[in-house]
Amino acid sequence: MQKQNIIFNLDDTLIECNKYFHLVNEQYAAQMKEWFPGVPMESVKAKQIEYDLTVVDKNGLTVDHVPQSFMAAYGYFCKETGREPHEEDLKRLEELGYSVFSMPVEPLPHMYETLEELKTEGHELYLHTGGEEKNQWRKITQLQLAAYFDNRVFISRHKDVSALAKIMNQMDFQPAVTWMVGNSLRTDVLPGLEQGINVIYIPASNEWHYNVVDVAVKPKGAFLTLTDLSQVAAAIRDYVLEHGGNGIAPAFPDGIEEVWPDAPSS
Image 1: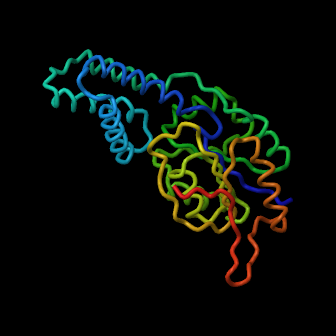
Image 2: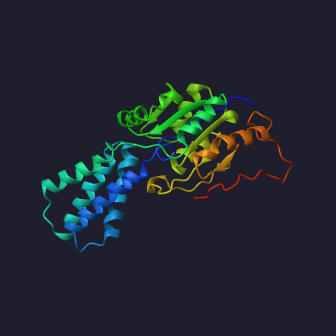
Image 3: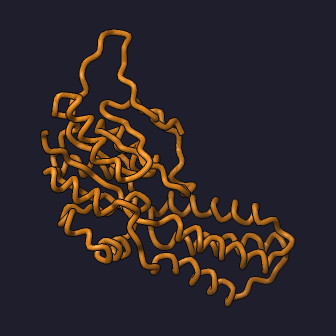
């Protein structure tokens, strides 16, 4: 089987991430409920999400987006309810927001086994993760992922089509033998489809609102939806062998198209 270039996302694809944000968000909601007992928590959470999206869209995936959204929502409800804002409250929310970026990380099930299997089969493994370099390297180092990715690591604050295109050009990847494996429709699936490479989508159990977007790009290669990492190696192997060993999709007669199983529409 021809060697494949396999690009993995990190957060919520290889390692736990969203569950830590969920924990901190629940602590934030509990604190806001104490300060604003008359405000429905649904409104508090919705306003924080609104600010969070605004910060990420503007500044990218920095460590500041969580504390900034917490403090912005606090300021909004202070004005709405007539509560006098307190410096100690803002400090508390700032510390809570940043705390998520110091929590120890843990691999998702089958991470090491999957990476080892793909490496043993002779494939080239790459990592494209979104965030700030210091925080992302903390996770990579803690879990000793350099054993699989070496220096083939790319970290993007704005993890989008342009970021993936830059990697594709820099590494001179051929789309037919290149794969993007990730959980995010926005930052993994769409960029992969736009670049015409093979895509494996592994939905996260508790997805971040930022990652949920519509997918309306027709695949040029494989577009597979799997349930966990343990299925990745076999899925790639089966697809490549089925398509002649080079990952190139076959030509179909007029009126007949290949069906990509379980491809998400949103």
